[in-house]
Image (cartoon, rainbow, N blue to C red; front, side):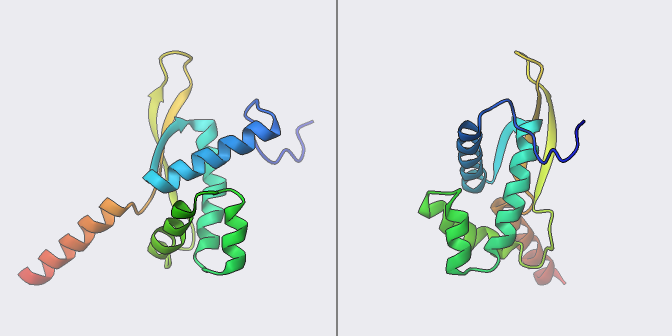
Length: 136
């Protein structure tokens, strides 16, 4: 029976899976988009959404909890001071998964996991608002 299976093990031992999660979360928060397989993206998305929600409230306790996964202080600061404030008004759904097709070598479904409000998109929106305000 398949009752109470909480997550996809990704055919890895616990230590390998934990290292994979750490590396992919750091890459996601550093570059704000990563290309990976669909199964990995769905697992990383679960953790990333919880971290961004926790990062909205910048406390020592929240920083220590997230530091368990992200051991890079510059990425941790970016998460708390840059990424989380962008999503202050949004109640959830901070990431999106865009399908890219299948990988040639093994046929795995590839996707692009990205933050919904990336830095370059936020800059474009601000410029559009400024030009609309100056015209009207």
